[in-house]
Image (tube, rainbow, N blue to C red; front, side, top):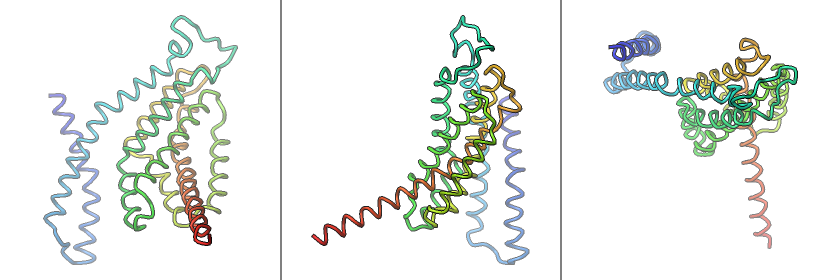
Length: 267
């Protein structure tokens, strides 16, 4: 009965979330445009599948990924695991950031995998590929964003361990973004900035937030409220840099290929 009640609650919550979107779309369609949309039956059928898919997706996250992410964060950041089962943490000696290498590796891999599986990023990558006529690859964009998120979360975990102020990292990151914007291909700049937003969605945020809070709760001298939050900022910032870097590398390779072709033609 508890499982059935939870399924019903999640489904009703999904309906409440989707209905305003449907009301706005159909409201403008019938009240403003005053024209019946083509294939209305297929559209309504598609909305039903959206409700079913979102409900099942949220249930899967709640029953599997969220508890697993919290458990892994608690285990990897447990002082008994970091310092040994019988070792006590000496606060006077401080925290050795090198002892948390498993945390950095887990943060990198969890950031990479969750971003690749992020539905919003998949949708953006497919649309970008269609609009650009294939110039922007689906997997190239997804992997570049995923690598940016992975590096950002790993660096954010390092910041929590060493206790550095977060604003210096964010300021430095945006300085790099501004410099990159001046040199990156114009085609990729809007997409790069949007990529920082689509990564912080249903799959990534809960796992990353659980990791940050679990790490700040177990590292001696850290405050979960001050140090635990902020990993999402890293997950939003670093994809901007990685996507523009991906475009710059691709552009450089294309220019080098053209030069080689021109040189071979001259010979």
